[in-house]
Each structure stands twice: as C-alpha cells, then as structure tokens.
Image (spheres, rainbow, N blue to C red):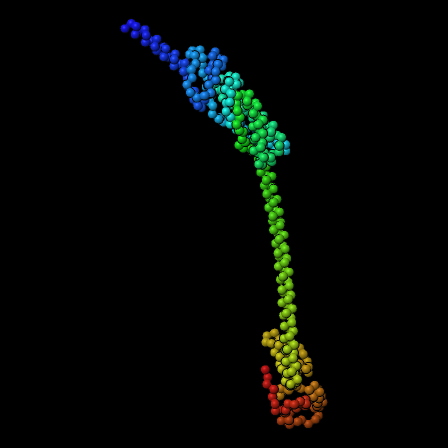
Length: 343
C-alpha cells in the first residue's frame, strides 16, 4: 500500500513529462522548436513531433495565404493629378526562421508586426511606380501591368521578412475629396460643350433640310403658277374668240349686252352715286324707248330744236305737246318692231 502511494505520483509526473514532449503540427501551420530562445529545428511537415520537456518550446505560425489591406495613400502621377489609391496584398510565410528573426514574436503578434512592415514596403513601391506614369495609365487597361510592377518591386524586401508576396491589387483609385467638385464641374462643362456641339450640328442639318424644302416649295409653286397662267391664257383666248364670234354675228346685240352688264356693275343698290352727263354714251340705251342705241347726232338735233322754240309762237295743241319727239334710228338690220330682250 505504501509503495502504491509513492508510485502513483511518479507515474503521473512521467505521463505529464511524456505528454509535454509531444506536440502536433497541423497541415495549416509551421512550427519552430526553441531552446532558450534559439531556434533548434523547424517543423514544416504536418504530423506528430517531439521536443525536450521543460527545456524546449514550440512556436507555431500560420502557413496559409494571408491577406493584408494597405491603408489608403495619396499618390501624384506625372500629370500632377492627385489620386487616392486603396490596395491590398496576399502573402504567406515562406521562411519561418527568418520570419521569427524579423518579427521577434510568435503567433498573431508576429503576423501583425510583419503586416505593418509589409505596409511600409507596399506604400513605398506604390508611390514610386504610380508616380512614374500618368493618371490615364493608372485608370486604363495598363493597371494590371502596374500592379505586377509593384509586386515585383516588393519581392526582395518581403523576402527579407521571410514572406512570399503572392499578389498586389489596387482596389480603388479615386480623386481626393477636395478635388471632386472641381472634377465634376469640369466633366459637366465638357458634357455641356458636347451637347452644344450636337445641337449646333442638328440645327445645321435642320437648316439644310428647311432650305431644301423651301426651294422645293418655290419650284413647285412657280411651276404651278406657270401652268395656271398658261391655262388661264388659253381660257382667255377661247373666251375672246367666243366674244369675237358673238360680236361679229350681231354687233347691236353685243353692244346692248355689254351696256347692261356695265349698268349692273355700276348701278348697285346702296352704294352707287355717279355724276355723269346725260348726253354721254353710257346712257344711250337708257334714253331709248325701244331699247335701241340713240345716235349722238340725232340727240344733238333734238336738243337744238328744243332750244330754238320762242314764247311768241302759237302754242301747239295739247296732244302734239305730249307727243314724244321721234329720234332718227341708226341704220341697222333690226326693224322698229324688234325688241331686244333686257337682262
């Protein structure tokens, strides 16, 4: 019983020492075996490993690809157009021994220290590379080549930290906040100028179309008026021919018809006031009892006979005074019995 009491603590201590001498390396990790702070061995293969208990320590590091966001930095390209660049990098720990020497720590603390030093390397290379090109090159398809140049330029400094730099990417390339308003104003001015040019070209095209349309209208109108004048002239010629034939067939009737037409147009109701001599030719058919033309010479003779009468002459019988004075009739084919119909 007394032996068991002493043996049990010894077994427990032996088991604890044996367990402390064994450690497991995961496939996602790399491990360093340290003895009094000095690296004794590197365990980069997954599996079961051993160390000296109480003398040696194990420090593990992440063997996966890590990502590091670089703080936004302002660069000035060749055209002095300032840009704010936001980048990130992907890397992994390639040499844990060198990484331990560079950082002097283990675990997450070592990764944070290495990340800060990697930020400084990337910021320096980004300013150098982007400062050697224009802003148009940064914003164009040449951006991928610039990112590759930044990565290649940072490989040496990253290797000194025990890091393998896999990739560097530019997430955003923006203008500084104080330059945005001026840039937007310039963009608006350029768009307004383009819109003005487009409107000017449109107005020019519209003017050409309107001028061509106006010319076509003038040509069509001129041609239509010419044809109308030709038709109107042919109609006037036919009308004059008809009038000429009618005048030649019966001159007296033609004169009578034209006189009635003149009376109708001149003596209209409500607005007709004419001051003319009653002996004029215009009233020839109005002075005729039979509707025939009164000869000017006969009318003048009748007026002279009326003016020659004296008071000493014997008065004529009443029947003779009321008798109308006969006027000589012009020689024509018409007889006194013929009456010309009035219109």
